[in-house]
Picture 1 (cartoon, helix red, strand yellow):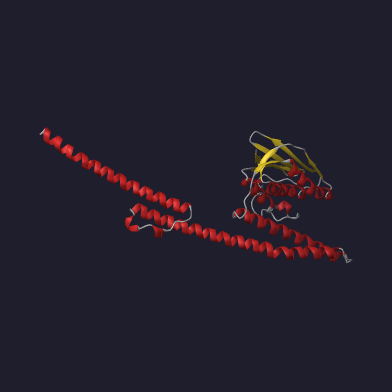
Picture 2 (cartoon, rainbow, N blue to C red; picture 1 turned 30 degrees about the vertical axis):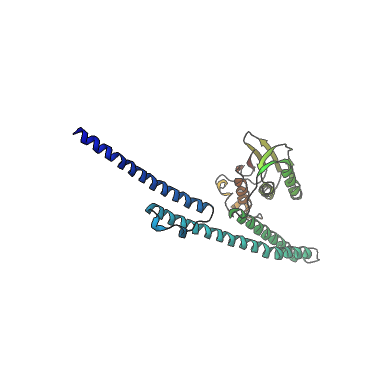
Length: 299
């Protein structure tokens, strides 16, 4: 009896080895096919036609269908992005000249002799055209950022030159309102995109000047181990606690600033730019006492 058992075991062992090898081969073949599919998707050459469905397992077939649908979706997304890019370029190009002409003719009219009521109308025309120019420029920039048409290129840069440019840009506007504008010198560095960071901080400073009627603004820098913090503090109208979470939303305008010029997109764009650089913005404010916007950028 034992001899029969030993003989049966001896005969079944090769069969078991053959079965294991066959299963291993099938599994390896399936994994190789799936890997080939993934590689073709990654390099953009995937096409379901290149796989013979008669040779595929159910898993491979379903996976091929999924990847084919994903490839089609990716191509559609790329096509839509190209359309958006073209549309944004067209809007920017087609509106630039008419707006520039409106501003030019408004300035020429302001130099003419005219009754006071006519002059106030011309001033309103100029101000509204300038507002339209800012709105379209901001929307074009925002659309390009959100759709990946342009990307930021952060690198380790000195903070001082950026702040000095902003200081020189907004000092005349602050002085025209009788405000002071102080900036502390700094040798701090941060990882940032110079052009777009200047755009973001400039928007914050512009808001601070706009909503401050007396006193002034202070720009200062503090260095930490991981971040560099840029503070823009003002003595303006301040922001209520319930409105603080809303000020970075698109087109938000507080009831308290209805009498001030603005379109409600500057802070939204600023946060978008800073977050794209792995930074963030914090705000502290007290109504009637002023606000402090703190921009944190990685070092």
